[in-house]
Length: 394
Ligand SMILES: [Mg+2]
Image (cartoon, rainbow, N blue to C red; front, side):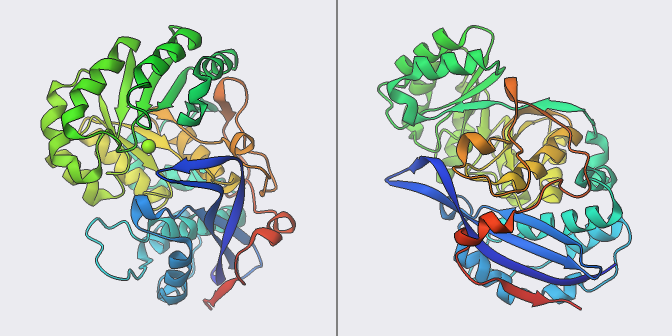
């Protein structure tokens, strides 16, 4: 079976609550969406979340890359099993305007294209996307299929005014793990975390994400203010540019460090190991270039005796939630899982299926062919930002 055509667009996904970062407030997430059509008419859907401040990608930039990429060279072969689909995904080369020393500036588009191929071929083979992961060589030592997983919750800085109330809600909802965003008001973070610990109870695993907000000279002091509340991890405390400083300071910290903004590719992963800059990787499918490259990172983490989290981007639709679910229920060893937030984050559901987790963050394995959901075009139509850019393949 061969690919007939592949198309891309930018989908403006409306959010339930505004998304705040640095000095901007956004009410939507612009995601790149890809549609693959096989010769028998089977359609597959993929999605990526380009974020300029993470991988230097933009939604319109991803669409321009898509228009220029030599896709026919990679996709115009027959594929009749998962090995052929894996090889096809690995042949894809995407053009980058300028330097790309971290090998990350086409990751969200790569993710969207790969997911659309996996979805289309999965539907054609009658097998779920997780079947491809099980056959991917680097995944084999990590395979740990489960019928259900439990996702973590997040309390972001916006809830700052009522942290106790949010914490109590998370406790009642039965979450086992909770991430707290810190760094937007360093003076009040310790007090806020104290309130959250009191209301969420002693059993929940609490960790913090500083999103690069601290300076090297503040790291030990701020971390020591938070450790009395028994945090299990600090995510990306310093800016990526301070990675070497983080490597030097880490041995003085009592809490494990996770890298997120500093971890987008194998280039980053090797640099983090070289500098001894972390204990864990935050692997997010879009940020890291799709399922296969994310497996490579998880395998490298295991090899280096590091932990990892499967993360997600706020604003992902059910397409990326489904892809994350296939990863989470197939690949073992994740310390924390994030994803399947759909109804809690999106103002409108844009996929044919609701992927939102249930009580306690619990969510089942997806068994339907492909990713197990599709974009609902009738609901997406008014949110598409351009005409579809279509590339005929054969
Ligand atoms: Mg983060």
